[in-house]
Image 1 (cartoon, rainbow over the protein chains, first blue to last red):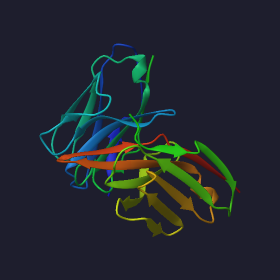
Image 2 (tube, helix red, strand yellow):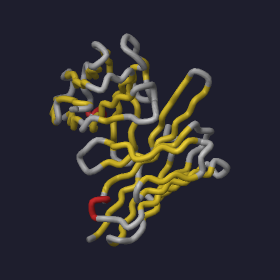
Image 3 (cartoon, helix red, strand yellow):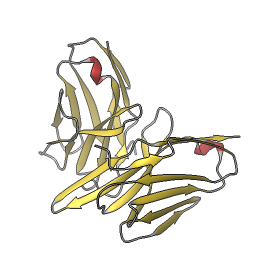
Length: 113
Length: 113
């Protein structure tokens, strides 16, 4: 099992450019998440999808959009990247919303210059 | 905002010693989870303790929960160099139909060979 797969692994963007982070899970999980991790800040929830067809804002949604394409896939889009969005982004999934075990992808390192 | 706060922020010990990390939180919780993150990787779930449990074991891991003090501790016994990682607590809260999982900022554990 691949688990949670996210791409790309590394990306450098110029301020104002747009990009989409892709995420897919093969565990038949209902819920999916996007987190960002900054030094000393832990993980902060950007957006989540409780189930296919629904998305909700997390703690830090500004500057991002998401799409739950189907049960497997949950993408994160930066419409106009800003240096403040330089971070490590993690996609995650769980069987139920904020369930007992959340499975994480390996992370995407994004630098906005 | 962060619910769980780990202490210490960094811990360095010799191989074979025990490592203890603490997590304090502010509001009532349904469960508390511990995750591990190796450098450059995603988070991996270690153990979950429910609010009505006081202690739980998994291999060399021992987790305690004191809901009266709103704190938890993670003990790793007989540490190994491979235990070097960041450890995060995450508090699960349930309020009516709303569920939430909030991560702390982590403890960086270094186990010296």
